[in-house]
Image (cartoon, rainbow, N blue to C red):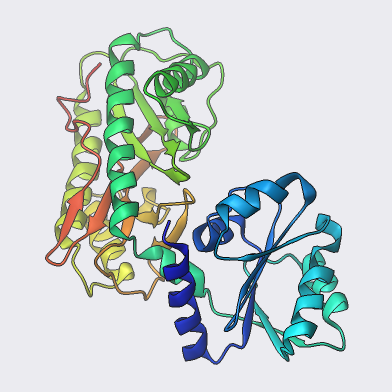
Length: 361
C-alpha cells in the first residue's frame, strides 16, 4: 500500500474541508492509511504527522507495517489520552472525527481526554470517499479475488446434490475456498434452500435442498485484506416455468443496470433502472434492498448503490450489482456480480455462468 500517498490525499481533503486534524478509529481506515493490520489502534492525522497508537502486543508489528507514522504504545483504555497528549504537543485546537465510526462511549472518553486541549467536531467521511475509488494495485487484488471466488463456486457445484443441508453446502464452500488459497471467507455464506430464499440474508441451517426448488448461494473470500462477493441462484432438477420467469426478470434487471454504468451516473439512478425493470415484470413489491454496495477492505463500503444515494459514479469505483426477487412461501432469486467503473462504462469482475439454463443443478 502506498500509504504516504494516501496520507497526502487525505491531508488535501482535510485542507479543503478546513480540518486541522483528524482522529481515525475505524480499523479499515487505519489499515488503508497506514498499512497497520492489528486489531487495536487509534490514529491522529495532522498536517505535520501521523500518529498511530496501539497496545504492546503490536509494538513490533506497528513499526514494520506503519513506517510512515509515529508509533505510540498504550493500552486501548488509555489510547485517547495518548492522542490528547500529542494534540497538546502539536498545539492543535480542533480535532475532527468520523461520527459513523466513533461510538458514543468512545466520544465521551475522547472528549474527556482532550478537555482543555482542543474541541472535538464531526467530520465528513473523507477516508471512505478516498477508499471508494480504487487504485490500480487495489483493482489487481480485487480481480484476482473475483477469479478465485468464481473458481471456488465452480469447484463446489458438481458436489451439490439434493438432500444436502444448507449448512453442509456452506461448509463445502469454506473447504473449497481454503483449497484455493483464500485467507478466509469474507462473511458467513448465505445458503438458502427453497422458501428460505425469500429471506435475503438467511443464515444456513439444517434445511435440506430439495428437487424442484430454488437454491440461493451468496459468499465471498478474503485475500490481502480485501474482499469479494458473488451470488448465484440455482434450481435443483428441471427448471419450472415460474423459476424461469422470476430468474429472467432478475437477470434482465441486472443486465440493464450493468449496461447503465458509466462515469457521472447517479447511484440512485442506477438503482432506479433495475427497480423499474423488476417492477415492469410485475415483481416491484418483492425487491426491497439496495441494488448494490461498494466492496474492498470491507464487504460493505462506499459507494452504496441505493435509491437515496446522490453520489455520482467515478472510474475506479468497485461495487456489487445484485437485484433480487423474494417471494414468501416459494423462495428467492438474486444474481450478484462485482463491477468496476471504467472511463466508458464498466467491467464485470466476476464471471460465473448465469442464465435459467446454466442455473440448473
